[in-house]
Length: 351
Image (tube, rainbow, N blue to C red; front, side, top):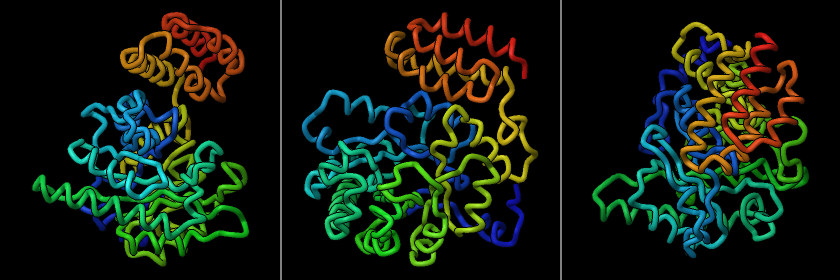
C-alpha cells in the first residue's frame, strides 16, 4: 500500500470531516442489512473503523412503532461514532423520523438511496429514488430542516444528513453526478457513491470513474464504495478517485481486520499479520469466539447461532475444509458445538 504519494499526503493533512463530525481517518464500515448489527459493529470499531452505520431502518417502521425497529437502532457506547441509516420515500415521514431520533446519540443521519432489492425499490425507496431526483431532494431538505430545528431547540449542533446512492438505475441512466449535485443543493453534508447501477446489484466490476466524476463536481465530501477488499484497494480508490472517504462493505465480511490494515497504513505503521496477508488461524478462531459471544448476549443462543452461520462461512473462506465447516455449522444451534468444531478444524488445517 502507498499512502505516501503527494495526493495522499494532501488528503491526510485535511481534516476527516462530514459536516461537524470529525473522524480519525477515512475508512468506514458500510451499512449492510442483516449483517452490521451491534456485534459486528463492535468488532469493526475495535479493529479501527472510523465510523460504523446501523442496519437499514425503515422510517415507516419507526413511525408505526414496528417492534423490530428499536433493536435496529440500539447500539453500545463502544460503537460510537455511529450513523443511523434510514430508508423511505415520503418526505414528511422522513422528516418525522429525523425529529423522532433527535435525542439519540448517533452522529449522522444517512438516507439509503441505493438499496437494489425488489421489496425496497417496488415501494419507490432505496435505489428507486435515483429515478426521482426531485423527490429525493425533497426528502433530504425535509430531514435536514427537521434535524436543524431539533438541534436548535436542544442547543446543540445539527447532525449532518448524508445520502448513499448508486451510479444510476441502469446502464442507460447513469445519473450519479446530476443526482449528487441535487442532494448537495438540498442540504446533504456528504454523498456516498457505490460504483454500480441498481440493475447490476453486486455483479460485475464497480466503476470508480463515476466516483471521481462525482467528487470533481461536488463541494461536500464524497464517500467511495465498491470492490474494496484490501488496504491496497482503499489506497487506490483514494488515489484514483480523489474521494474523501472509503466505505468497506463485502470486503469486511469475515474480515474485520481490514480496518486494522487501513488505519495502520493511515498512521504509517507497519503491516499487521492480518489484512492482505490474511488473519492467522488463531486470530480467526478468537474473532469468531468473540463474535459469537457478542451475538448470543444480544440475541440469545438459538437466534444468535442461526445468524452467525453466514458469518462463520465468511470467516473460514479460503481455509482447508471450509465447505465441510459450513455444512456442519449450518446444522448447529449451540455455541459450544460451533466453537468445538471450529477449533478442531481450523487448528488441524494449520495457518
